[in-house]
Length: 387
Ligand SMILES: [Zn+2]
Ligand SMILES: [Zn+2]
Image (cartoon, rainbow, N blue to C red; front, side, top):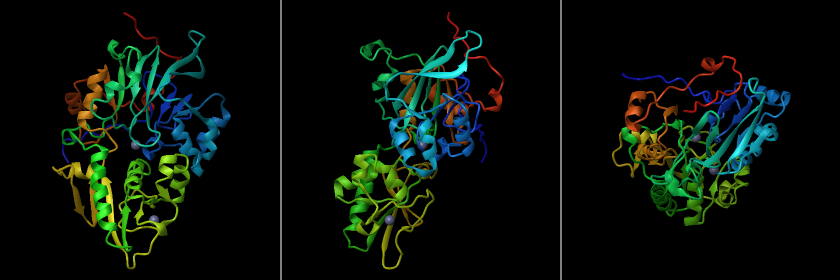
């Protein structure tokens, strides 16, 4: 395809704060790590034995995350050894992060404030708001925040007790630009998508005991809302894998909506793979009538499906639009509210050019810096210029 612009991959670099790594765990010189949520593309290097070795060999280096994210990891066997290094930060509570490196210029310990803001993407997902001598920087991680809701978020307010004082001035936003293009102008909210899923599930399973639903999911986490809603409306639990079940046990509302017993339920989400599949992994096909439902967004947008609220039949699947990322209008709403000095996309489809994002968000946009570009030795934080 013409007109593509390959963006360097985001490698957890926050230019303003040397020595930290966000959603990237391969740089074993980092003095603090931050994990926004449990999706594979944000957990690169997190399961590496070298990371564990590094954390053991140092003192005072932690992975900062939300309580829910820690809960997920401590029930996920391969991440269990990491749990002792995870520091929970309370949501919406500005918290000081002390770095272990001495600032050689001022002889002060380098430190800054981080605030975790729920990001509405999947269980445990948060944004990081960093504040320090370097200024104010927001890392959105992946997010879905409804239009009009950005301005309600307390962490962005200059004074949470006086909302009319306005918003903090944000110097730089590291932004989820997954759907920052015109085709994704508006996307139905989860409640609307749920109506469609509910209808397709109900109409199928009432036909008889051999009629089964298979929810073929594109990400390991993020569809819990569907399970909970199906359980509320139908009183039926969804079959999930042992790995997910052990994790969901920590979250009472989700735990009540899932089961380990596949024989007891017509609704299955028991695959641990995110690949498209028409088959229910826990059952032999013989004699079954399976309706596979695939909640997706990209497929609808790339195919330019104009009726975004419709279920579309495609290669045996029923594809239902269900977005865990904000639409263009929702992104614009956040940016309009915070008016950042500049933006770095942390995820951007190659078909969207930086200039297009600039145009849509009316803000300077730059490529993410790679680790290599920032590997020059430094001595603590740069002081913010005060005019
Ligand atoms: Zn994600
Ligand atoms: Zn199953």
